[in-house]
Amino acid sequence: MDYPFELGPIRPVDEADSLLIRTTRGCPWNRCDFCVNFKSSPFSLRHIDDIKKDIDAAADYFDGHPFRRCFLQDGDSLIMKTGKVIEILDYLKHHFPTLEIISSYGRAQSMIKKSLPELKELCQAGLNLLYCGMESGSDRVLQSINKGVTAADIISAGVQAKEAGMQLSEFIILGLGGVSLWREHARETAKVLNAINPDKIRVLTIGIKPGSALEEKWKNGSYVLQTEEEIIEEQQVLVSHLDDSITSHYANHHGVDLLLEARGQLPDEKSKLLAILGRFLDLSKEDKHNFILGRRLGMYQRLDDLQNHSLFNAVDEKMRNLGHPHAGELESLFHSLRSRIV
Ligand code: SF4
Image (cartoon, rainbow, N blue to C red):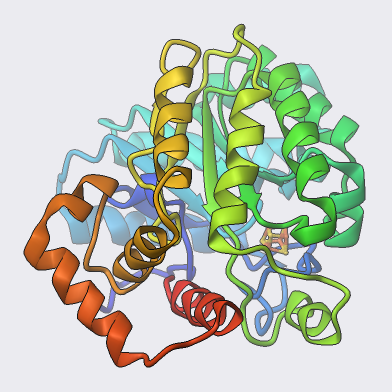
């Protein structure tokens, strides 16, 4: 659909129904190995007059629609000067007075460059939710994917944003440590989350994107992808290492995640989360493969769908049509289907 204002290419899953206003183009870092979101678009700050013109155009276009949420695109609005962001927030709230939540991606690099009083000012002006792609809490994993931050940076950024009164959603990428670093990835990520206690923890399962630096490493063998089952084991270690003092909402929430029902409020639902992961891991090898194929083909939504005999048989037939692939071929197929999900 064509809109009379500029839109960026991505937004968080949780912002599906939000007003989108583009404040910057691309990502000022643009070097993470797994990410191709902005590979072909260099970063630029948008002029404040152009952003205001877009807000005017959006207000005309949506004609009084009572948006509750607005997401500021693209990769990192916090890189802008604090005064400019506040000017945009004021303008936005004037044109969309029903807004309750205004959010942005926040890279830890930019978040730690803002002082606590600045973050408080931003929060009071309306920027009350940040999505932080921490990806991992392991310094070795962060370094290996060229994230450009340390676990200590991520903790400082997250703790300060919360202290400023902002809500914080942390994204984790399962499988990012690969076969060699998965256990460290899970444990160290839990440690960082324990230190921050974000409002939300959102996990995403790695899909190696064509053209990414991670694809190069995968091809040359310096990064070895885990199997679907191993990635669930990794998630089991991650969840089991979250402290009982954590009060975050935890969710597998994207189509790339195998077990979408693994979501719940911590700490009360930690045992429920572990039971769901355990239920998958306890399946027979054949049922695991049937479930993974069914999920990756979009035929299953949740583990209970395995009890639907006609669905199970339909997936089983697809499996038989594949001939008798060996385990490595099956995993490649699962990964290739997963990587196509956007
Ligand atoms: S900081 Fe985010 S948007 Fe930028 S390259 Fe890394 S993952 Fe991509």
